[in-house]
Length: 495
Image (tube, rainbow, N blue to C red; front, top):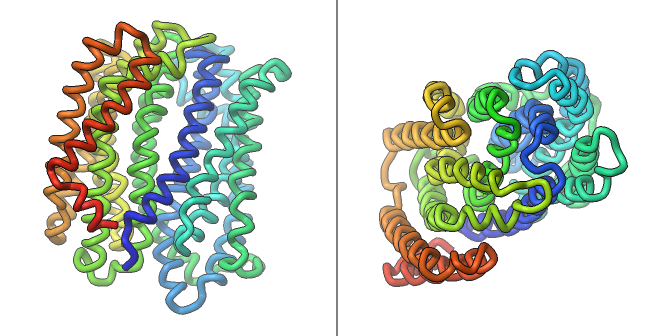
């Protein structure tokens, strides 16, 4: 079996470029809109299309499609299966988009009940315009799944950069030309979603046959059976955001935006590390599921867990120490105030409590998808949602957005621990203890050294010095710790 590390690195490289442009998008939005009522309305309008994108796109569709497609590859039927799947989506997605745009006037008031009448009307209008993004992104996600299954990871991981680039252009160039100004973000998002699909089409030529007439194929039926429980698992994760959004709509103006800016920084390492490792691991899980949790399947899980942990823990320590100057450097200009920075850092620190947990959830859930047990992530996700809602209601009044973010972090640990314990019941030998313990030790050393350096030497010179001197210092300290513990040998063996 080809080592997982190389494919994960290729996926991470493309995803990393995309996330950098994502940060650029958030910088542009923060400069133009800050943490404002207009941006709150955009986020509420985008919530349901974004939720369905996770269900029918990157999350649900890929997990249901890849196991079926992987078996079709072994019998030489992959081009036919891919073509029929594209045809089915071209029939289904326009109807879903039209239905979503029509029902925006009903679901958005339920989602953002705390909005004023004017803000609510703006959100409904934006929601109607934004729904075609779902169809474009879902088709792009299917293209990404096909390319991943055929060993191509860089272009699919890079393609989400296009909506980010287009939204930067919308925020900076179109805002003075359209009314309402926040609609510029919608136009940029639509253009970028189309680009996600178009940039991958040339690479599909050898993997997709001519598109047939719509028909119900056995493979499509199996995808449907696999998709239903996977949809439940992805939906459980999105319910947390739904509850946070509804409760935040009753807080001070800009609360939803504050959570969004903090979540973007939280998702930066999650997207580069957790998503890339899980993306590289899922085709391996799908191909090697017959023997259960042993052999190549167990090896892929061990490599994914070790690699993900070695990369995510230093990111968590670094963001805890340098999160505030990073926020000041990226966002605190234009309409984004110093008070916005303080609120965003508080929410980010709370989210970081679950950073490693969500990395584990991405990997463990893909392992169960590969084993043909997608119901299990649904059940553990339901438990995590129940915990999140309970903590949200408990903490939102005294702690505001900090309490909502902390509840999300704790819920991630409930999900990760439940999935991990259920995997242990199916087999052992997949926990790589040396990289786990070594990463924890090195990350703790990174945090302590960086906190001391920041307090005594860096912070008096402002956020530019804190970030551009602190990040290399943190990387150097962590690398020294990893080498002193001999874990560079583990990297070499995994590669």
